[in-house]
Image 1 (cartoon, rainbow, N blue to C red):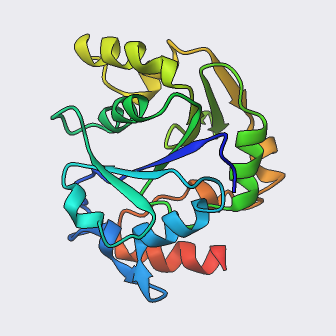
Image 2 (image 1 turned 90 degrees about the vertical axis):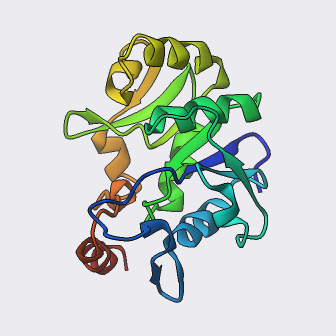
Length: 195
């Protein structure tokens, strides 16, 4: 277990396209969020689940369920909240990403430097599977206050260690780690790739 990093799983989405709470959707005999937790538990004993309803995730042993600090529906709120709970670099992950490869996480942690370490895949940053330094807190707040509350805009204001698609494929050839689940069909499709 690695004590140099904390992990924050964002579970604040509304699951509109999923038609139900996707974080609690059962496949392989456990809720989706538990798949994410189990993959990441080997990296840190400090795993936090950030959501609007923290009571919902108390069933996950060894996870700390915390409430979003800001009352806005935006993943930046989860990143902002994470900055208040740690003083060391942390991994930020979406709760709807159950196929994360440990090798990819290890690669990110090993190569972390600057304010954030983020993969750029197909021309786009992947901010919901990235390592951040809590020093980004003020820049997040400023971004939200200026109503530029998107990860892509925030990243332009951060000192980022950009990891390439080629680097990602060296540890996750199908890039399955970056697959987030939006529909029940996604679960079936990505499950077949990931196993």
